[in-house]
Image (cartoon, rainbow, N blue to C red):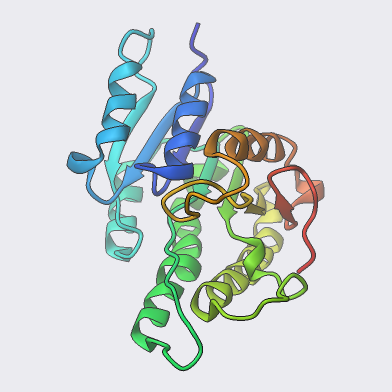
Length: 237
């Protein structure tokens, strides 16, 4: 029996961790708002949606959303006005490659917009949807590569800085939204075998998301604002 008491909105739901989040939450009976840039070409996501058709309720609704387009974020929030969202997962992101002496500064600015600014824009646009829900949680996928303490290999300037910055953004968000009863945390999914993580990842998407969902389940106002790995360990900033 499907349990549709909770609703989750996921960005970047067409592949990788976003697709796996969509699958696992739908299987757990959640209503899933799966967002991606081009629903028509999201083959894996559309296949997953079709597979839920035999359940008592249609668990997954696909919505077009490019987090790089802030007007589109506002438009979707307006379209979903009155919809309670128990959990907002800022999953969409980019991994621009960079090497010393060959920095593309326009690409760097774009990485900041998608990886750092967009999660805050999503939180601002959907804060009322989350505040009206039962669980009231906002989480953002970051990376241990954004940790100052963990950086022992250098390089990856664009990705590291955008993730370090979103960590600070979400730390402030957790403080600012606590009076509204909204808990927030920053998540490190591990080195995952996805299009972004590559084939040499240490874990697969199912293992990562299973762990991340447990961390999300344990999220409360009391432990809001922490930087947590998929295995439940806290990561130093």
